[in-house]
Length: 226
Image (tube, rainbow, N blue to C red; front, side, top):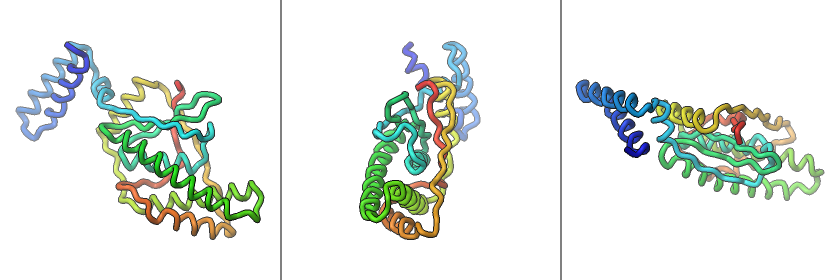
């Protein structure tokens, strides 16, 4: 029997084992266990097989700024995914969204669109500050981007992680990539002189919204095996 068909059959039995009918649930669970034993398939194998990936290469820095990682995490959690950074030395990072069904593809598309929009808004804001030196323009541009993200995060309802998705993605990561690590990046400290950057950043994001939200967090795991 084809391995994919075996996995699909086991997954179907496991879903039926959650039925409200006790007899049907017990029968489906027994069948799933028999198939798993016969073909040496673990629950992690079944979970991992349900997972899909989608990736995007943004052409940005090897170590992205806080606001890019924060946007990726915001989008990933809005579509019940995990975002990972696959990094090859000397090359731009690849952002990988991992989840169930069409979630990763939708997250990748959304991330691409919002990142383009945020970059354009930030560049336009920086272009209007010719009186400052390059470092100060970049710093205020980062403050603008952080305010933009804060405004977007407020437009959506509280996000709750789907436990089934979390377990499936974790199994997939263990199977495909093994060990991962975390990148911690800090936001630019906001100062009293940044009032305009904050105001314009939040105003630029007024028409942006997602269906689900999270508190924007600067942590992004990356794949050590990449």
